[in-house]
Image (cartoon, rainbow, N blue to C red; front, side):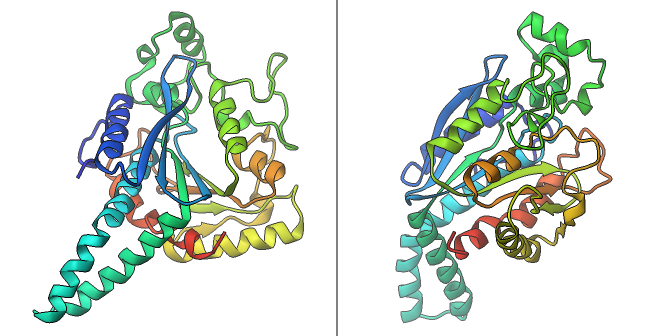
Length: 321
């Protein structure tokens, strides 16, 4: 086991170290690549899980204070990579078990079926996983403003007067999830413009580099699923609803009603709105963790969140996106 949920503090350095360790351990099925830089010069990394030519994209850590999903996505990558790598060995063991049954044949058989499905899934799809799009904001939320190395940036974010545990912005004080050029985007000041941030540009580059079949953006809080797009066609939203219903079944999360897609007065510019409008492909936001959870988020949410969303990837693959 590489990803350890029992570490109360999980820093950016821990995440990078674990991402590298996953790639070294499961090199046949998993790669770790750097796709961009934050404004405070931290690498933004992406895992490529699978060998298929169809792409699904998972993203987390857009908001700094939402610290549960980055490590959970790494754990999900480890979960599927381990099943894939063990499949051939399990086949041989199962054949031996059939010859000399010990009463556990059915259990072993069920594992084999699941292993075979995962094996085929990762040969059909490559899952792109960006566990932490906003490493600067993540570090501020965990360790305070001194985590920002650039002195000018540090002064800039301190001036905003926000408790660091509530910090949702990047290292320049910009909300990345209000920075994407889409129909709902509105300027928040005279110097504000869409796609101004390194993190935004990095994700847009990945959108355009790969022919992504489906994009899921993981946020916290609320245990809910946002699927409806007012700017899109009815047929698009029907397909979104079909996918969202499947995700509800396995996560237990609630579907957010269409009228609550965007809160009143919201400046717009979300990741999913940009992707849906630009590519006309499924784009869904999944909110993990209880609605009333306080920041900083309790690290124990890692365990329950993993159990709730670990099969999301499996279900998406079964939908033949």
